[in-house]
Length: 209
Image 1 (tube, rainbow, N blue to C red):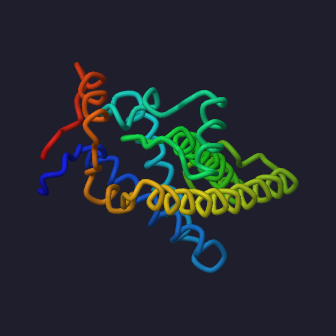
Image 2: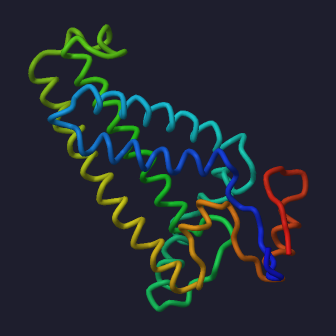
């Protein structure tokens, strides 16, 4: 590697989760009406990925844990205000706004998956068929409406997320997309010391020159 210090931030499972979720969402969103079987299986995959991410948020390496990036609303607001004038502090892991976006995406996707399973179950298909078999036409319609709303809302969140990644890449002069592929991020000396201090007793981080 180059002489510049770098930190292994994103573990292999987080990176696999991220790009698998991207692929599954694109497939699910683009096959809703014409390829229902493909749409359903993509939805199942999203559901499994979400369950993994919830667990990994508690037992995974430092930067994957919710405790590392879920910040108070006031801190998120301050970060966004600083970013609006291109002076936001750089974070090795997720920044406060990025952390808030992750939670929003997870919640929106969960609702999308649950209502999708419910609507499919009303039709007598899928793993939730026994639970939703007694739901009438009105209930099915409501599930469909909620499912479609949150699918579109998730897409909106994705657009905002991508825009945020682009802005962060420019402001901090760091390719955040590449970091999610390789796992490595740049680390200044003060950031390295803070990371090393906070990483005592935790796994999932490596520092190289």
